[in-house]
Image 1 (cartoon, rainbow, N blue to C red):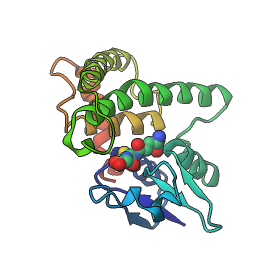
Image 2 (image 1 turned 60 degrees about the horizontal axis):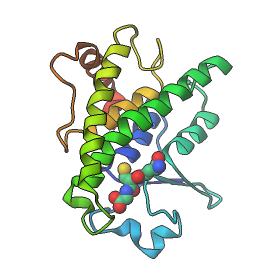
Image 3 (image 1 turned 90 degrees about the vertical axis):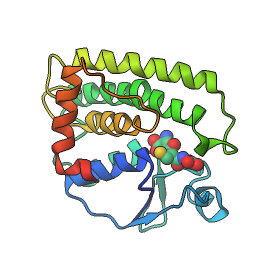
Length: 202
Ligand SMILES: N[C@@H](CCC(=O)N[C@@H](CS)C(=O)NCC(=O)O)C(=O)O
């Protein structure tokens, strides 16, 4: 098994943090995104969308999409449960995971994609949409701050994949200067606690 990875990119980090929480070690292959290795024929044969992360299984199956990869590892090694423990909890974790992915991670990543030089010539950039993403991301961080006033973790009283997604999204905001504001005390408390876990180094 091999994980096609990129140390500079936030989605592969989500998988690495998830694996670190589970204590699973997987050999990684660094894909050079700067040199567009992900857009070459060899990588496109693994993931036609040209994105990392990709998990290559021993039978040659390629699993792309961060949450699909995490779900695979949750199935292989259920403990600690990061995707929920029973029907209701799994649904709650899924709800928060999706919210963190679409409302926080994707709005921050969208600002990067639409405005940063890295994506010049790779995709069609619409800077005005990047500004909308920035404003939306800032609103969502304010909302998340309020949400976290009432609980320890994003999806309740246990660390889950929703915390992984929020952490990797918010940390990626460093590049476009989208971040936790001084008055967002609950979000800051959460971020400090999540960043202190050894998995955050992944
Ligand atoms: N929906 C995919 C998104 C993967 C993705 O967008 N990966 C980025 C890195 S974070 C990528 O490979 N970008 C291609 C590039 O930079 O050219 C997932 O959840 O894994």
